[in-house]
Image (cartoon, rainbow, N blue to C red; front, side, top):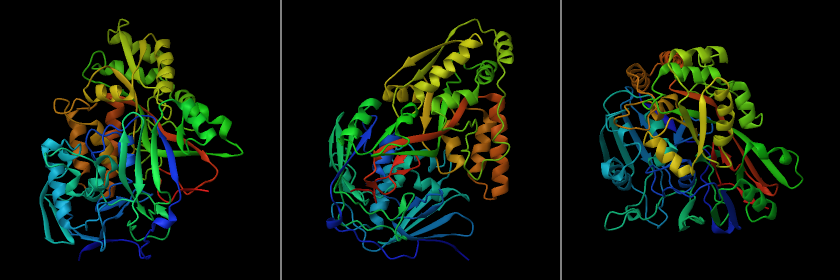
Length: 514
């Protein structure tokens, strides 16, 4: 008997141009790194492209997986064969019909090493699963086969950081093989990019939502475009964002935690504080001295009063969490809540035993207004200096900080990481061989073994045991200090209707201005 993953039963919603009214101006703290899905990406890129591109399946609000471009998904009893049937009437932004042939073209491009798709190694057998075949027996059917059971294969396909493994039209790529711009199936289509200033999307008037009950649901559900254009304005400075929202030049933007107090009961502006599954982290480069010494890493963990740091960095909105698993996750257990006690005396003793002699330890940070990178670095610096660590702060442009972290440069980086759908995906972001990927923070063989097992174990109870053992090991080796799950604070006029946020992403379908 086959397991069926079915879409909802409500009728499809066909969106006409008459419903769109205006341009919605949204601030972004940094320009796009790319508009090529899953390539040289960051959270901003992911959040924009999810309006343009869609995959076979997508995530609901509760992080479960539902059909998106697929009408239904059939999963074999052994969890190795996945058959996707495409919905009728789908069109690309250039008017071409969507068929299984475009999925096959997109898949081959993703899996070509020359594309540098960030998720390729999760599907080629070198890391997570091994896709042994992709068949397209007819224009409406895609059949994917993997070589071993996987409880997370559909979630792997749906990840925003992978561009949702979206089906793109081949005209997205020029005749010389150069990526031009994404031609997808989403509620908005690519229009213009003035780098460093803004980029703009246009409502796709032929868009058809997945079957839904009339409401948005994660990245599926009702996805009607309610405005003619989305204009993303590059505004790195938080004060400028607020000034723009006050004047109406910006309709929606993220603000820092220290800016929220004056807007809690504002007469014309609405404040949205949205907890997410993402993480704020003091990310250690564990091969670089002195972070290669586990006793120094443990000393840093004990020197940090986590409750106080979180209260300061989040303006009282965050909850301390040193686990890779978010507090709100069903996988968050009593074991996941364990963390080292704040103990300055023990930290000093560890530093002395490790032979630490006051060498500078630099915390790299950025000043993006919607993340606590700098605020967390300032608080951590004071706590580390209190136990004798010569902690310094280096403020970098976000793109440079990201590049250095990925290249394995530095000692500590105060960073924020967007949510993942499953704990295994979060582990994959941090764990692995630094010779192959310098961005990995943790390369303990046991951690890698546990992570790999989590991708093949289909029994939920046994997966929980794996995650709990992973957390205990992390508390011993302290490859980084996880601070708290991200809370994003957004500001908009009260005339804005709809829910413009999902997890850490602006979600701007079904959003309109009065």
